[in-house]
Image (cartoon, rainbow, N blue to C red; front, side):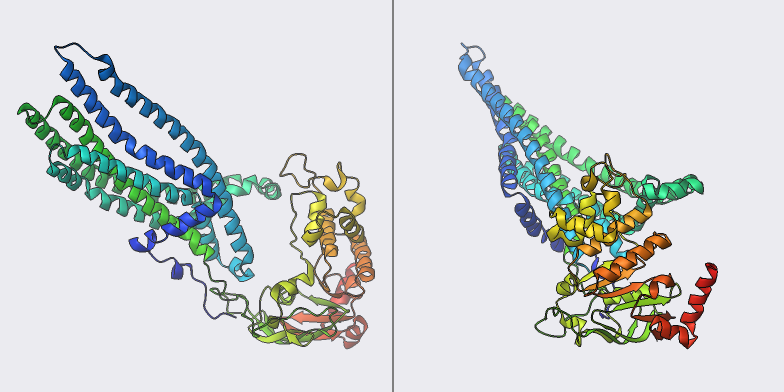
Length: 615
């Protein structure tokens, strides 16, 4: 087991400006892989849009100068009106391109969203179960998901930044007619905004990182009244006001933090925004002076007045685009940090293979499973849940695990399906350590039904078929598994039989009883061609008759499988070849039902206690 504890702050350290901008090429590559043609098209349109302002200002100068030249003489209207037609055509074309860009950008957004979330799903599904025991991991996951949309902002920000840079260069070229120092003056009075953009971007990023637990908490309370399985208890215990108050509590913390932050931004923004106004006024004054002295034409003055204002706006836009690009990339680091997350960076992660070449699970399994002095504790805790556990499960036999709640029964199942590795000791399959087998091959040879099984809001057929996705479209295989689990009878009575959508999340969905849902979960297990079957109280929602019938089917249909199950009903447990009794993380008794009754120990006490309840 990895010795390093997972700590979100170990890897979420503040990034330097260069580290942030160095991520931009990776973001662009990600976007290119998602939608290359759309990305290229939007980039080209940005370049075209970049030169439009300068072209417009130049032709406005031409228009004014031609009008002035025509004063007092016969007007050549084609000569005068041609620039107007050109400017009109440019603006109409720019408007059309802008509409196209909006459409293409929207499609690109959806493509990137799909690709990014698929990447997050793929990463989350590949991480060890230990990550899902750590609240810090959920903080990281939540922040990554909250900021997926910023990926496109980064990619759109790059051409926007270049577009504004080109526009600014063109406008500065026009201003050079007045004097190069006019350009310097406008730049100097606008440059302080760089500090403002970088400062605000960093502070917003730090605020969200600090507030992410409050965002998650408010989302949790906000979702409670919208979940069907929670609404009954909320009604019975009158929890509406409690939930609303908790939701407001966490939201108020976030809102107050945002208000304080924006007041701070406003003070800084008012100071910095006044400087460019002074620069523009000085340029205008000098341009008027030059025109009055005959150094500039009226057209030049008109162009410079508009260009000076546009230059400042464009320069401010350029700096804002740079700041926005920096901020978006800063937030996107969370997405890529999650994708780059080292699976071994958390305590409790599966240990690396001991052998260079992993082997496959033998078929058939000949000797079975053996636990040798297994000790285990959950990540982030100091209490050993299992303490020196040793027992064997011969191939093709049935073993029951019994004990009081909290004794360690479910933990044993988690180790046997290799969600975790022992801290010490070993688990062997046919004499070979679990770690020497291909993990996916172990999982292919294992099927399980857990007490907290999933109620998929999909069709009845798919609910069963996900037990073996390769057979998902084979209805005969699905129906056969359903018959084995005892669910075929009630599924056949549904409105669309196996094509009926289950649950109340989607239109026309049909809900099932707890026992019926459990039968479907058990049918999933029968879909598998695995050699080992684990049952963690799979019949908790069934009545005594339903449980007895189901275990009779298990006994008949799993003759060649190794079966390990947990049950609190001793009428069921007695069907096992071997029973192990767990107490406080240790195996205190093991043997057949008859052997354990003869011992007069814990098992006999539990059995007699339950029998008296039915006497």
